[in-house]
Image (cartoon, rainbow, N blue to C red; front, side, top):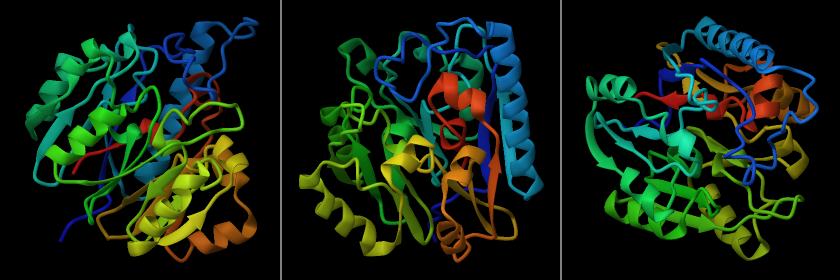
Length: 300
């Protein structure tokens, strides 16, 4: 039986953390620290505290966390969305838009993955062609039904996404988005997540001509948990389902996202999850423009 969700999550402890100038042009959730109210050491210390708190909260629920330490050249190392692992014990590497994010694919981390998985795909060469596909953030996977959901953006190249899905035998549901900021949503995992029984998704930001297509596809195998654009601004869509060794399912998100859900929405989620795991990620969300799901990768 195929698994949608993993019992083992991968995280990278940041050596440094600050607003990455190389990503801010395509990420309107990211804040630039122009006023100098916090120095870089303070921001890194806060991010490290938030990293450890989320890691501890996940482990408390019996979900395994494997973590490695990041390097000083990578302000976004805390977001390990440059690889994907699969149940057949293979892994693949992907092309990253920001030059300093390409450095995140360290030899140590690739060797670690290679010790447990066989490398059967590497899109790194496409970085030279300005074609980017940022792994688990660009593509949201329905692993059981072999469907990829992808929103076109500067970090999710249409041609490369089609090529990857064709070569890896995944059906592609490709669409365009528009946020209230007037630009596309930079990563698909900001607006949706796929669980075993439910898909959380914001239709508001999907362009009208694609909404029916996407709605029909997500409702084919799953219940729909709808969130609005204001809620994805609070990172409600940047969530991840995981399970423990007792086969209990959990949804992981930030405390900001949890607090942005309505009472009725929280009640609805109890139908699908033993608990919602959440932790404060204020600094990481502010300066990184990403949240809980961006900090987690799955080891299958």
